[in-house]
Image (cartoon, rainbow over all chains, first blue to last red; front, side, top):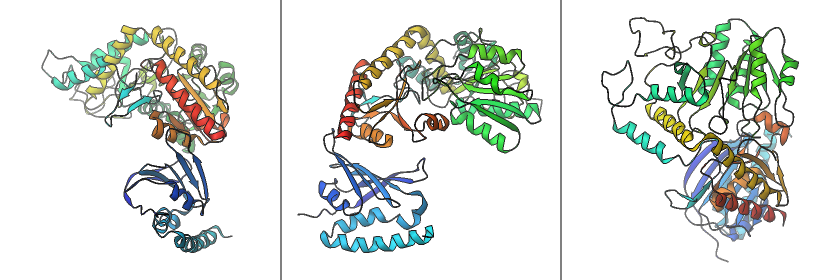
Length: 126
Length: 388
């Protein structure tokens, strides 16, 4: 399998949503593929609706981020959960970065994710 | 008709309750003419020959709403601006705390100024619930007390498309010396509004919705200008020796240079509506809305929150998929523009969907049957996909 090397070209929109989450829309340097969705499945819940005019996907990771986009599109909408902006702001970038590394990237990102979770738990006092 | 935008992907625009699009060609031409010619307004220039748009538009508004004199129509930026000016001006004029009534149907343009004043201790506030999507006089009567001085309520709900029967409410409040501000943002231009027959204290409108003007122009009609304190001061082009704000109309509430382009667009929009006929516009809206609801009802998994709206607004949800996702898919995959979320009306959504928000489709005179069918088919695809 060819691992995709996707990079963020620019952030085109930023707003604070009704629930306090921060929404950013990113333009990527190449379209997202189903391979990226397989990678995302390692880290959260992926929903894939492939029988629409364009194949839609969403990714949900509690306390971290949610992603909405279409396979084949070069733009994606990312929402950073409201309580922990400072801890999780790099998470989408990390997903793109470690996806480039293939299988080994999954384990490495899970390690980073654990340390993020610890910081969140300390913040929550749990 | 599918309209072209710059990309040039055809777009189906069903967010007309926010801002109507497209605008009638006459509006675009009037705005262009306004830009081509030097500004002309009585008291502000010595020239003649150009249209005095503020005066012409006031005359058009007075005829359109059957209210006057024309000088009692005041221009503002939009309905929110009008409501702020009226609500805060009424409180300042009254000068001591009093009781105010509003409703669950309101937009934040009403709720936020009133809640701010409540927090400041300037008013106490009762919020009347809606029943069968409407607020009736009986519900308002229940919360009126000797200290009630003001009622602010919407004429048409921007979520449920319901029209309140404001005539008996206005008559009762007028008889009991309670000032009545009506938010007509969703009704002006959609249905006939005969202010000669409805004794409101003030009726608020915006230009950029069904009156077909451009964003940035709105206003209000006020029957009793003295009820509202002057809260803005500046140049009016009149009585310039006096260093305090003139108390005459409309200078009492209008300061600084007018939004001539906006006023020109509003003037042309009203003339367009008069040419077509408000009854025809109302009928077209109802036909489109009925058609859309019929289509939605054929689709499994759709909850419609207002099956019998009186305005061309339909609010719905698709089971198993969040309203924001529905909007995202329709917008990005199908080029169908609707509005999702709370529609700046949080209390309505608290009642109908637990505060999660929903998807809203809203139509204008320029929406076509083909667009309704295209949107319905796309919604069906999303609903079926969400249930697979």
